[in-house]
Image (cartoon, rainbow, N blue to C red; front, side, top):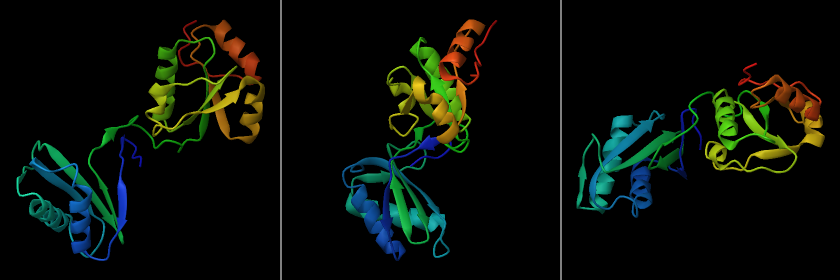
Length: 206
């Protein structure tokens, strides 16, 4: 699950009342929160109970399940997050930082040219594009893996498009523009010729 500033590994469960949510919270926390200090971070989007009531009930369920636990709202050792909406409850333990920008994919697809460039420049440009909401497609002569960017892509491998089909992707696959880490005009022109479409080169210095 992905928010604009973070993503989480979450578990979803259906419920009919607050007691069921509390029981599920104790179950999902059985292996992760056994001792030490903890806090419940709850957010209720239902009319049946408030966020505060949600936190109280879930906290009580965890204390009943593990007598050695202690509540600590500031800087606890463990945290359980719970969001409720209609008849669904979502549980997770940690928020992982994301690209911190527009929601991924909200601004369409962008092609990232990878041939002849250092990975550090590819990661830098790729992350900038992802922050603007672009879903990346790797463009090159052969498939190229960029794990540093896949981390921000919910750990999914980036789609690949060979140079020979790049223009076709531009017409039929929704790529809105191609971007190159080129730092010279000659590099940018070379990439434009390879694809058949003018590329954007944000790092261009001459």
